[in-house]
Image 1 (cartoon, each protein chain N blue to C red):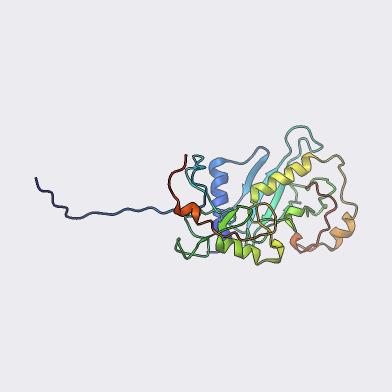
Image 2 (cartoon, rainbow over the protein chains, first blue to last red):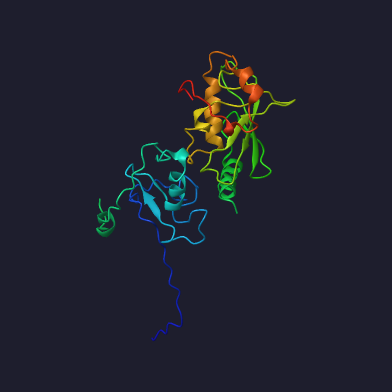
Length: 107
Length: 152
């Protein structure tokens, strides 16, 4: 028998690597940015398209936000440059790339 | 669309689908500028049987900028008598001013104010009530409150 593939649809899904994948607590909607309440995979209210142009930002305190949302907050005097979650001084963390590249499943 | 509208739309959806915590009800949210909620303290407190109303006013930068929150003072609702609540409804609470955070929400503010009332042991007006009310701006956000204790 000969099968001829006439057409096909490729479907892909992407997700920001928040380093929180194994802590899957059954949250169906996924994690949202605490500032705008839009999922990380969505975009901040000022953007129209999710993805690389509306990235996430990580703090050394481990809290994650849409970068644009956090910068808007940090840009205000009222923020005192503190993390909105824990009010510690905001320090942007370097992304830990090894968590992404060695994506072999860990027990 | 203003940033505040999208965030408030989400909060409103959550309130209408998941409901509000005990003692808090949504009174009016016809637009994304001004909301009204009722607040009462359940269980034993100095405010047993009293129902208050809160007015929230949002600017287009909410939640980056804090909402202006005050107790309603009209024929139906009067502000609670509390050391941090002025007779015009203005509230001296740090989370509405210097301790505001954009991860807070309308419901989070209501819960904080509810517990502020619940823990009250002395039903009195602020000592500077008359002086403050005589010159208070319409919008409590324009007042630079000095926070006297860190209970709230």
